[in-house]
Length: 275
Length: 295
Image (tube, rainbow over all chains, first blue to last red; front, side, top):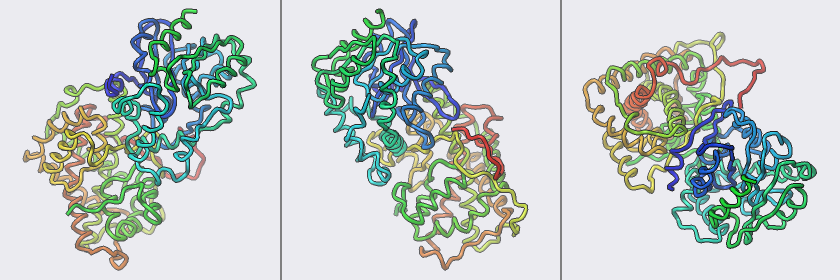
């Protein structure tokens, strides 16, 4: 699916002065897919047909990402993202949902599961940021105060494409990379990504480490076996700390396991949803 | 020769602060083409802004822009309906953001025309402003409105050939040397922009369209004469040739009415007359009292 087709599927929820764009497909138990950085909801597009055949799948673009609000005037920390997701769920009348969170989306899901557990029925973590596993050095340059002046939109796109390529086990074509990065090609998109990067804060996951043993939601941890961005050791640690968690590794997959091995990831998620 | 522009990201020193102050005072989320081109003319924009700013922050100026916007909406109603909206279906989120983008330009463009008129008239040596002394002149709040869409634009020379050709067609039809920010923003929804332009282009040559742009230009000059504070620029501070700044300013005064009208036509295509007539971002008065802030 081309990114414009995905964009055309997006609905919108206005939360205070901000807005969230999201896809809502399927029926039944709600399953919320939270993307990571530097992509957007489109990263889940390959899994959507399979998952939405079995449940109601909601794919928000986190504020500051994708085609959600990218104005330069709000907090993009994981704490703020989690708060926005809660407000968004409430506005949609969703009291509780299962979550699949990838990268920083996984960090958001972890904060929800530890600090707002009533919102989380089941927790699936796909190479999430956790403990002090992040932020990657990859992004430090773009988080500098002068990054907007130092780097043009095309500079940033070149950098991001290079970083993304390395995070796949398969060799993504240019079209896939352009689809994944489409929202960030303008000056506003670039600046929004820079602001998101400047909000990356290890404290957002270290402060909840002590709360991990209190997670009551059944938890599935999925990790691309060859993930070089987030080492699988963190998955092993999560499996030790979260009471009802198990870790499953995906062969021939790196950080973007949902793209390297989408069918397998979908199968794991659906099996978990039925369990 | 295509005029030089200084994009927001490239602004340094005094210009960077001028850009910031323009956004805060005019309540706009980006720097429009007119400012980027004025900034390309040696020291002109800082001097223009320094002289115009006292008026720019007044309730009177805000209301003049409101009246000019309403004039444009009524003129658009007389010109005709585009019927572009139904031919360019958009998803919910796309439509929401397109409406937000149209509101941004619907709000700011009248202010740009008023400034262009003021610049031309000042350079012509005309008297502008009522000479108020400051006391009792109401000022509006500063700051970009909380819900205003960011001024997001595609590149002036997009990779997509069809879009590049469309920009060229717009420039040629409207006699533009550079493509306005508005069209570059609407290009975020290219299907919509293609349809919009296909409906708009035939309107542009109609006598009622040309009449409407002339009326807007005349109204702008009339309003500017009644600005609260005297507006004059010190030509000794302007390093650029006065002929160049005059030509640039006059070009904008000539071209902006069409832009205002086009945005009004696009708005009228999507919303009720009442909604189009109202300011998308009504401004509160400036106050030193603490207020609840929507973030």
